[in-house]
Image (cartoon, rainbow, N blue to C red; front, side, top):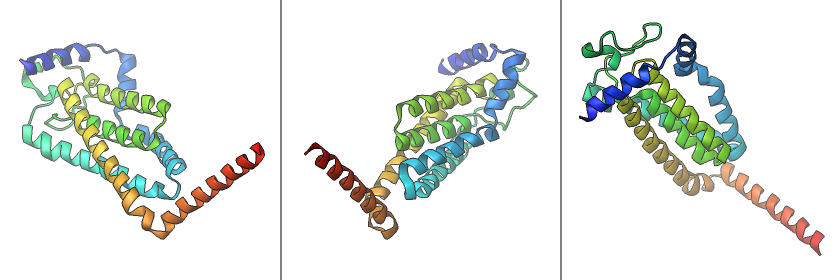
Length: 212
């Protein structure tokens, strides 16, 4: 029942295509398209975390690696659900772009897992409303492009998104623990915090003197 509903929803969404959107969705789905976005994330990490930015970036890379590998080895190779473009019963019904279909199995979507993973991890680091809204829209559009291109069912996307959200949150919590209990006792990072506190104290002192 659920699988049939998933298939019907896929056929409906996949049928909403045009030559104009074919090129756009194909570009959106390409990983290299978003290299500038990842560089912008690194810039935001640097602004937010200063000397700790490199450690945050390494956590982000590790989170993406874990979500990518789990989506394949713990899901695709276990559930072995055929991609819609590989499903014999849907032959001739699936709209694809440039004949690209990907591997044999599609549950869960690695694109959805990786996109929502880095979205959740980074928004918890940046903590700006504009960024939270923008990055979640980005992850949703990238995920939807996989349905448009005929390579994933909506269920594949939802499963991948949930996996990515969980992994992103776990890695953020791990980073928070590392920041509180490990980095702050290391000279390089503790000096950064001490300097920040001193600057804050000076600013507060000046403001107090002005009021007097």
